[in-house]
Image (cartoon, rainbow, N blue to C red; front, side):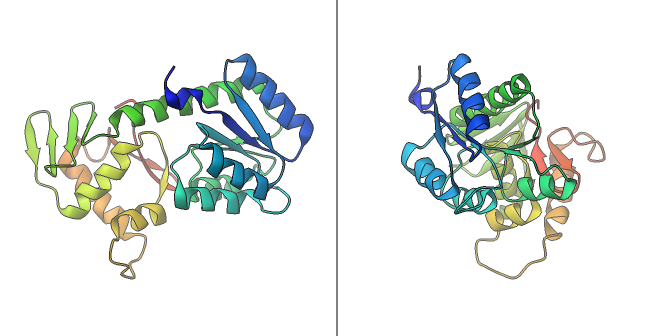
Length: 233
């Protein structure tokens, strides 16, 4: 068992019945699990425990889940699965836009929740393996040290912005990035830039890496939110 696998899954949930249910199912699946019952306690536990995954309710006392997620994303790449009774499309879009990796609406199936947990952890483990100088997905490879990108054996001519955009997406396959999140990643100098400029960069990048840029295989559009790198690439 790796050091990562020894870390607990943190459940931040103020409904003690739901928290106990989720913890029981996690432990039945062989995971270590811990529980926090308010936002401040949960944020402190996440920063102290460095969990493998955070399962996060949104309507929390003391500090709501939106703010917990924002603060986690400022300091950590820990995967976040939102578990909330707020099931409107605007809530799900907001959840992804602040950095959630998945969003499950209450009432929920515990078995489905466990499968989503496993899927997120599989993606996270692939990212840990790939968190080196060389990123490799399908026929696409990117070398952070030499600043080279290749498709099969052909070197790609990427601008610094395109390289950084591809690096962010490839490093976290399956994670949905909002346009604003991507803009924060590539805008290193603090210029005021509209979010839609990301669409322009993605379009140019697709024309360089995709066989058919109108039916992209690598960089997928997530409607109403932004983009993700296809985890099946």
